[in-house]
Image (cartoon, rainbow, N blue to C red; front, top):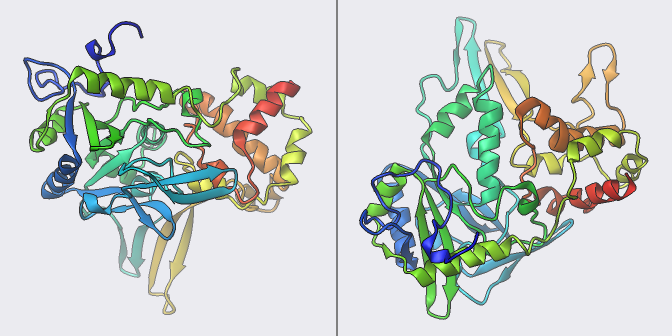
Amino acid sequence: MTGDPAAQPLYSTSEPADDVAMSGNAESPGAAAFDAAGLHRLVEVLIERGYRVIGPTLRDSAIVLDELQSAADLPRGWGVDVAPGHYRVRRRDDDAAFGHSSGPQSWKQFLHPPRRRLWSGTRDGFSEAEADEPAPRYAFLGVRGCDLAAIATLDRVLGRGQFPDTSFVRRHRQIFVVAVNCTEPGGLCFCASMGTGPAAGPGYDLALTERPDADGVTYVVDVGTREGADVLAAVPHRAADDAEIGSARAAVQAASQRMGRQMPDTDLRDLLFRSRESPQWEEVASRCLTCGNCTMVCPTCFCTSTEDVSDLTGDHAERWQNWASCFEPDFTYIHGGGSVRQSGASRYRHWLTHKLGTWHDQFDMSGCVGCGRCIAWCPTGIDITEEMNKMARDD
């Protein structure tokens, strides 16, 4: 964009609060701002309103997602160093609470749990596990643009198909989202290539841009929904000045030019279709353990399997749904015919072609949001962007 950054809207919003300016003052539209005390109060307000606040916290030498009791649980002053097959936390030289890239978990686990009971039964009948249970009310604090896009992707797949996943729909309907615009992309981030960041897109209630300096931390706040405006009104804040808005905008725009990784600038779907018989698949397979880590950490992979269990008496049985991976040997098992994809090369090709190619045919979008988790948590350091760039060079 051109012109004075402070004169333009800070970021796009999801469901604009028409009569509530982003500063909370209808006569002076703009962004709001608060300090670390305001962030602390934001968490308190969400808890007071009945939300279970989920956000990043430091545990077991990683920044993970867990329920927060207060803003003191955030990983203030901690960052991460990432590389293919590598993840380490490190101390920062400031008090930023969101100065880190994606950890091993995504918000998917709270909307599409890795394991859940579908029903239980006895010889007298059965009942659905969640039919009479209220859905948890989650407030997600610290959702990056890539992960916000991943939540929208899951909603497209699980919530808006011909047969919606009712558990996902109930959970998704209840969430309050506090997004964070990235100003420091990680070494494996490529959200700019996928059009999902570093600025948070539609789908948030509030969006924060964290600006640490020698005097502390300031949060520039954008409102995305009426509920977001209502929550912000309960938090001490002020109107952000032009310098703060301009600095926040410039930092996010600069982050888009500092991505650690980049996808080739070509139609990835067509490239993958043309490369079906590429010898590169066998080369990747020589390094791939088919462990499924990439699918487990991916914020959009949604495949599941079901398991029936019973007690020793045979009087009680349950059916459970578990996350599944297309790298599992039995994922394509056909009774009487074995597995369709028996080689690691065929499984990796299927995963990558689906993620970057045939998702467009199924869901009119890519299955990748550019978070870089699959690169960091691959035990052998296979880099999806490196593989795609090599494929493009050989095309």
